[in-house]
Amino acid sequence: MSEQGAEDVLDVRGLSCPMPIVKTKKAVDGLSVAEQLEVLTTDPGSMADFEAWARRTGHKLISAEQVGKEYHFRIEKTHD
Image (cartoon, rainbow, N blue to C red; front, side, top):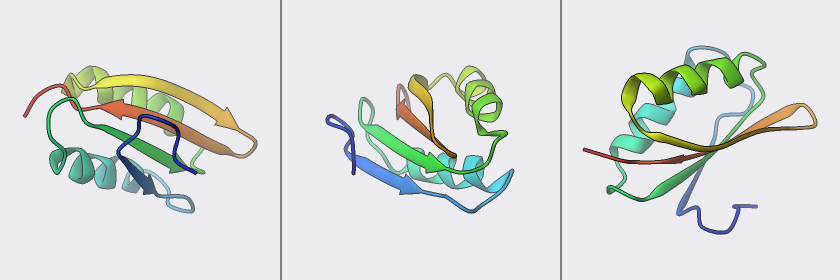
């Protein structure tokens, strides 16, 4: 189910704020610079949360889309 180019997928569907961001931070910390993470969530607040998190951390939010009742994000680690 991973989109082409994403090295890793984090499935946090069913979790609510702040857990999708907490788990995403931990997963991104484990990546190398330029690696990408695809995140799957069902939390409606995720769109705003992930945009704010990317701005705050400096990591690149490559894509953010709603797919039915899910939210899919692709994040690129830009620094250690």
